[in-house]
Length: 79
Image (cartoon, rainbow, N blue to C red; front, side, top):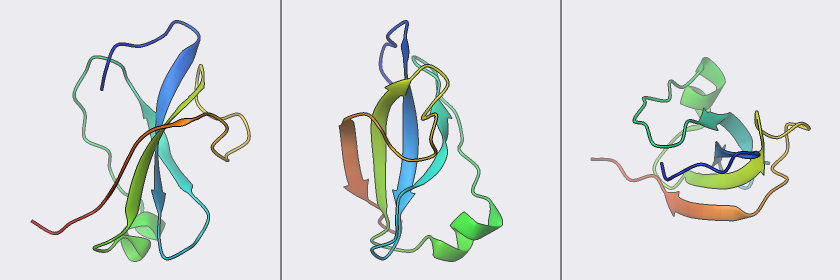
């Protein structure tokens, strides 16, 4: 992830099959990490699932719904 802003965090979301976006958690700026999938995410995750990163208030979305702008987005592809 890129350089952080002091009052904002990046948050990773998945969107499966026209369902609402589901938060996978806050992404620390300037670090590498693995984002584990819980059982619900594993069940919903497949090729074509959309991954999106939004810019959120510090600590992530306070509502559980993306509130900030999408700064990156792409579809999952099997490798």
